[in-house]
Amino acid sequence: MDAYGDLQSGRLGPLGELNLPPGPVVTVCGVGRTAAIATDLLRAKGVEALTLDGGMRSWSLAWNTAQTTISGCEVVQVRRTGKGCLSYIVESQSEAVVIDASVDPDVYVRLLRERGWRLVAVADTHIHADHLSRSRLLSDQEGVDVWLPTQDRAQYPFRPVADGDRIAFGSTALVAMRTPGHTQESTTYLLDRAAAFTGDTLFLNSVGRPDLDGGTHQELASRARLLHMSVRHLLQLPYAAEVFPGHVSEPIPFDRRMLGRTVGTIRDTLALARLEEAAFVQAVLARIPPNPPNHSRIVELNERGEVPGDPSELEAGANRCAVV
Ligand SMILES: [Fe+2]
Image (cartoon, rainbow, N blue to C red; front, side):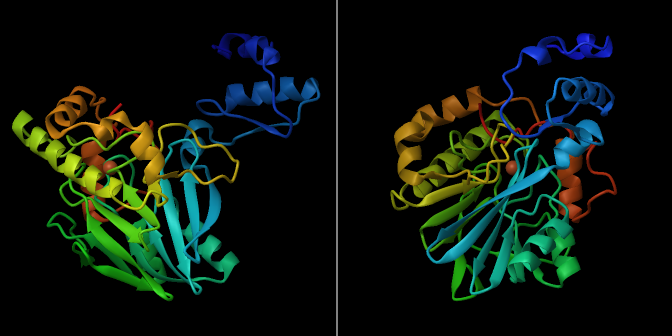
């Protein structure tokens, strides 16, 4: 619905007809001005309303968390509400690893301190194309190593991760499983075969797109075949293993509920994953969405491990690393 015209004329318009849930309402618009009008009008009706300062830029950076226990380890999911990026803090015996850091390093530092955990490693599942990785910043700030899947693109010091490598923390380790396809280096981190941090290889209801590195139709098809093999491998994990992906395609509610799905549920519900290789390749290549905005610039910065002062312009727009 379009509420702008009414709001700018001082009327709630369609907003007045919304069945609002209990609790405070936060209004957001492009820069924050129309949202402030909506807030005033909602308050006049007795609704507890607040305006998000900074409009959509702030929305792109807003975050919330959910937490669960898996195999005796704590897993905190740190979610960029508007953009759908999911990152993780995984803890064993008060030692923690951060996977796919996508919000300001200070957020992870605060969440770690609040829980009394010590950061021992930062890892990325792949070189991201839809948001700027904060992993290098976080690792520099906290004086720990950043682990990246082996590749020759990143231009800063990192610990290379090969298939089967272990990132040890507490009494356990994340075990790397190479899952190429979305990108050549894409890697899944397994926690006790009970949780799989799949990056952009396998999502809750889709698979990663194989085209962001560019190339001919043949090259894309060969990456789609790799993706098919990787998804097959992942779906051979135990039925009850939890899949925790690198993003979701909808805004994330502030509900503290983990976004994850068991391997069994994905096997049963994701028709794409049941296709034989040729049909899978055809389906994936037919369902590639437009490129994420600024993706070549984002990849370039991620290869250099740099984050500009204000990343919100570059990162504007939804995630587009999944086939649709
Ligand atoms: Fe990606």
